[in-house]
Image (cartoon, rainbow, N blue to C red; front, side, top):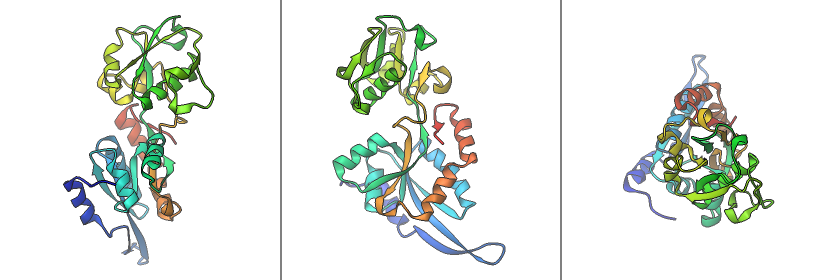
Length: 272
């Protein structure tokens, strides 16, 4: 399946054997079972959120050992091999592709947050202002291109072939009532194209770099029903373990929701 970078391998080696422990006592003198989960995250927002989850989880007797990864492939390798218990960094389309390509026995147990793609413009303020023949920029990679086309369809600018879903391409457009012109660009370059197009679909990370707050500045934005909401993933054989319900409870707590809303200021949105 691949090898870990040396630093990550060392972290995993020293973290083995910590999944479940017991023996702490409450102030009533009765033994309290303490569970420990090894949670894999990517550095950045997912790691920051999990630190907030960790504080809440500890109140319920759940200790989280957070292990950061610097790439998108290793967290699923580590999970599938049993080196970690759960990971938090991916959305369902990515997980589905990983399962298809690598035969992982991994499943989602709950949705967490979304870093929403939005439609932005320097020329109009509402979707209704889109004029016939308007130029609309979307990412040119398959994953984000399909994601952008779904947003355009949901906002009435075009129609796609039935059931094409996230695999949609420009070739799947069946109706384009305003004859908008789709311009496919590298996702990272799209914010710099706003002066040259009428509307643009921009990923949150690039929108933030350009100074936008998705929930404030986007004309239209993905909602919590988007398939691109992030999730917690575990091994299929472990999915019904009660300890994961404790993790979900902590993640979906009011304290974590408040942290996300205040810390990310609209660039990450809770989906519960």
